[in-house]
Length: 298
Image (cartoon, rainbow, N blue to C red; front, side, top):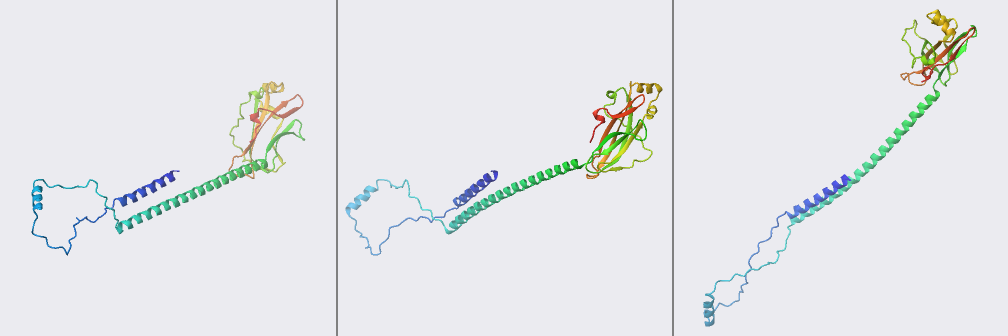
């Protein structure tokens, strides 16, 4: 709309300039000469005799002043253009027409450019939407096909009252375990555990060897038996409180792993786990327990 208003203003200005240039041209008109009465070549010489009546009349006229006759509204003098003025007027008219035609062509070109820009923006927006949809689809495929490490507890077949914490790949693609952590905590119940699992930064004697689990495969994470309870207790009294269930032993840890189908620089996945050791008089048990923060998956 602003371009159309500017174009109309330019056309009006061009017309005013053309009219002004034509009106400002001085018009040279031939000087009007006083008309004289034609003199006849066949007129006879005037007579020298003056009649008496004429002489009396002249004497009478000498007694009055001379009278001047003026015309109130003289007839308009017709305007006559020279050929230079006609050529200039025609040239200005041609320039105005050409300028108007040029402005119309420029407006038409601007409208076409605007339409093409709108088409390009629509194409870019459609391409962006398609790319975003493709990204979401790829992410959903990766999430559906990614590995999932789940934690279970298996009793030992060779040793009584002994258990093993197992990590199993329940996903659809291989998983690469890059780190494991295990800790224990003696508390009255799970409500007395810290809000989030606490892990101390302890250096290993040997670097952790990565483990690759195919879908359905499993590996041992942490073995635990009845004999390990006394090693965790700092006194005999605490061991007795565990035997009488006044206090409980909680084992917790995490498994850090990556999937092999996503970028290697992405954040790894984690599986947190927590177990409660049940100390009986003759038999013991190890079951999954603890707050939700201790049994989370990413």
